[in-house]
Image (tube, rainbow, N blue to C red; front, side, top):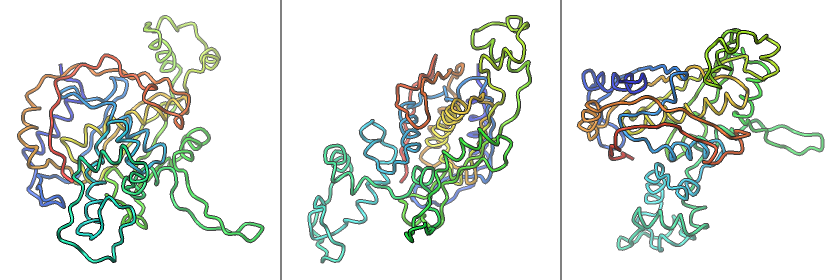
Length: 361
């Protein structure tokens, strides 16, 4: 049995293997690539977690919590065994400390000092251990610049004068604004969050790959609301035939369903995209819970969609694997702004074993 998430993902892999053109890339690895690809997932069919390989679900959740906290330092991720940003942080550290005369462990290094070709630097393993154990080192070298969390929660705004003559900067908390708009103006065409801030791209260790998302809501019919209520209790529609509209309102049954579309300029199809699908699936559920709506469609739109050349054979192996029924998600959080890993419960997740591929930085 192929669920629609693995089925559509397999179709993309097959499309890349058949139509992908060779391209160079900044990592030097090389890719086969197509331009523009979209997929839609119906959230009523189950949570969009690939089953053809075991997904690192905790890592997906921790990164999303990190984004929603507005955090941009890898310390939280490293402490929670999520290492997807390690390479970017280490590369930034390595470049900035390369060949400095002072010990690279010294927090007072100075770029103007003479270079010493004999200097040695921390290995990536040593670097990550230092992040874990040394808060001052982590504060300096764990910082990635104004990446996703900064843009989502603290976009630089305009400066304004207040009555006493002081100048203050008004920043935009895009997540808070989105939630407010979903509650007060759900038919708005401006239900958007962007991470692509041209003024700050050069301060980021990596410009955002999934650079924006948009939400869309639509009213549910009385029948849809009744079906939703019955599904909560695993009952058929006859269980709700006597319920009135006011009954549904009194039970706080959602009146709208919520869809989310994210746009991605650069798509690492083997390692990154399954992670992204799950992450935005979690985000859609969180937003829907926050504004009392039902998760409806999750839509992916990719620009440069590619397979790294060192992932081609392992992608072919994945295409031969079995797939399983999609799991379900249970959320116990009270607020999207007060999350921890225990608020997420993925139920009945069955998958094939892990498939490992090398991450290109």
